Amino acid sequence: MKAIVVTDEAAGTAGMTLVERPEPAPALNDVVVQVHAAGFVPTETAWPSTWTDRLGRDRTPSIPGHELAGAVDVSDQ
Image 1: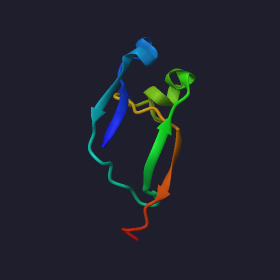
Image 2: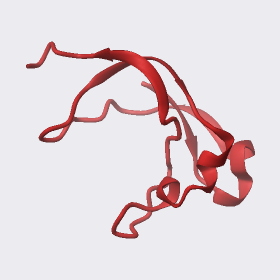
Image 3: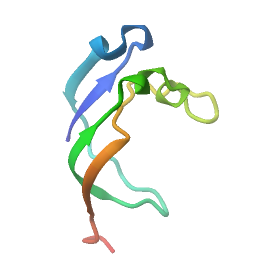
């Protein structure tokens, strides 16, 4: 899949790069969404959750884009 990733918090949106990433494997109770369009808000790179998870572990490279439109994939259910 193609995704925009950020690796440098100080660079902000200038540090975003379009890359090829592997398809993530859903975990128990996850829902797979076939994303048709995605977007992000400029402040998303300032959110602590962009850079670390709830346990304080590093999340880089991070993929911003909490705004999306798509369809729930029910093919594996």
